[in-house]
Amino acid sequence: MNNFFNTQRILDLIWKRKFHFIIIGAIAIVLSGIFSGPTFIRPKFKSMARIYPTNLSELSEESNTEQMLEIINSNDIKFRMFDAFRLDTVYGIDKASPHYISYMLDIYGENVTTRKTEFETVEIKVLDYLPQRAADMCDSIIHFYNKKVGEIHKAKDLEMVVISNKLLTKKHEEIDSLTSQLNTIRKESGIINFNEQVPEVTRGYMSALATGKGSSSSDTKKIKKLYDSLTEKGTEALWIEKQFNSSIRQLDSLKRMHDIYQAEYEKNITYSHIVENPFPADKKSYPVRWLIVAFATISAIFMALLVFLVLDYRKEE
Image 1 (cartoon, helix red, strand yellow):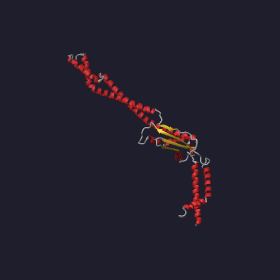
Image 2 (tube, helix red, strand yellow):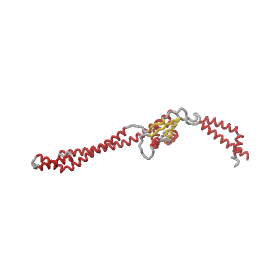
Image 3 (cartoon, helix red, strand yellow):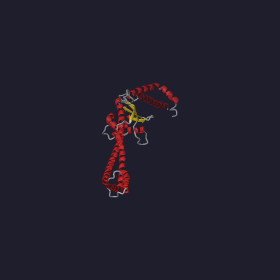
């Protein structure tokens, strides 16, 4: 058996059977050339695009490029591609098949690939039987990606718009209540501004008493009435006034916040910058005929060598 793989023996056999190897190689070249042709293997054309992520917010510890890859490779975008290009017809998959989704995802994964490049861009490659469709599929993946990210952001922004609207409504109701309370106190007691009225009323009342007008004077009676109102209702009026001013400031803050969320919700922007646009290929990318022919020829010659070695070894026995 050690003699079976003897180098000199193999070289002698090759030289002895050289015409056989030439014929077998020629036949392998011809047959592999025929069977790798468009009659037996339908050619595919490649289209490629490179895009860079923009306007993305951080959702986790992954980079924007990794986030972009996650969304592009999501089943949601794949299903949109299935429908947009009727890929079930293109790939020859029956929708009634119980394994339709599995078959479609497998074939789609073979024809559509994405990867992160060393320059933090995402490279999209599409193989298809039609060069224009391959380019259109690249464009559509980018379009569906932008649409998907926009939907994610709009859903989040709409949620914040609804929340801020509820807060604004609640704050308006609170201000209306405080306004009603202030108006009632002002009408019943005459207290307009506690902090400004207290020193003036006190000074006027003390001055009236000092001048000896006493309580008989009509002006003194008015001052005393207001003074008594400030004493009885002043603390309540001051508290409501502070609450009212605080609520007004909070309302302004909530309004600015609501306007920001509303603007974010209404804006329409893209979430990718196209570094390399896809275009229809002018030559096929699959199959690589020379590689098939070379592999088939080498395999045929190698198998022939093994067969001749076995036959030669048996003769020696």
